[in-house]
Length: 252
Ligand SMILES: NC(=O)c1ccc[n+]([C@@H]2O[C@H](COP(=O)([O-])OP(=O)(O)OC[C@H]3O[C@@H](n4cnc5c(N)ncnc54)[C@H](O)[C@@H]3O)[C@@H](O)[C@H]2O)c1
Image (cartoon, rainbow, N blue to C red; front, side, top):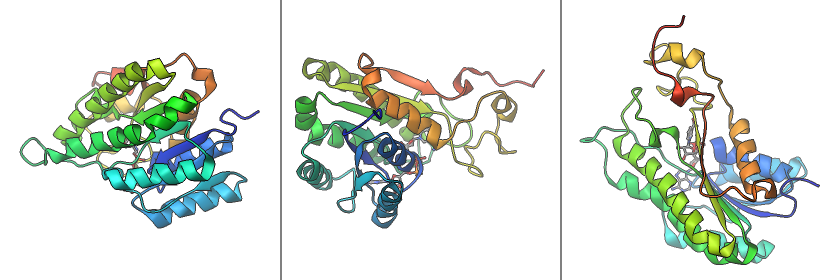
């Protein structure tokens, strides 16, 4: 028996990155995956890959996680096609960089909306299925970063973790679990966030941590979505190979 056999899993951001990795992993674990992304054609390609690997997936149409009507249609199509929703994984995001004076405050709202709208639209289904929510709240929400500014995005990431805890509290009466994951940077070679980049301020510390891959994060998400985690709710799990616990300094 696979870990997510027959579970109906809505995953946002399935065109790329962690959302795509999660869609592939959840399908391999037996879930019926309903994906969605602004980049619809790439999300459909993920769906095709799942099909080629023997899994089941659906990508109803272009999804904008910041628009209630788009999220509402996505959830309605999933429920109609498969008969309900068991799991919601929110991975879609457009990270916006900028300092206090550069970055529009609207960034906070759109990152929160990506979770809030999906949770609200799926809540009646999750109540029926005693389902679960997994959110991805980057490590920027628990530590400030030196590599580039993202003042409001970091605030939004912390808010995502706080909202997830709140969903866990409200959901407990209905058997709904909610947990958030904070991964360290993965799959970002060449970006200013890559700790192994020569221009990164903390390369020595980075060399002493354990790098992860999108597949590693997807496996953790699959665990949290599975019955193996039936007593895990309201947790904020940091999976960063030790990165956030290291102080900068020369290697000895
Ligand atoms: N990659 C990392 O190193 C890392 C580390 C920590 C946390 N995270 C977090 O994980 C999540 C996913 O990151 P990623 O690296 O996979 O990003 P990514 O940019 O590779 O993928 C994000 C996906 O979301 C889609 N998207 C963006 N805005 C959307 C919208 N409004 N509606 C629908 N789809 C939309 C994009 O088209 C893209 O396919 C984000 O919340 C990110 O902040 C990533």
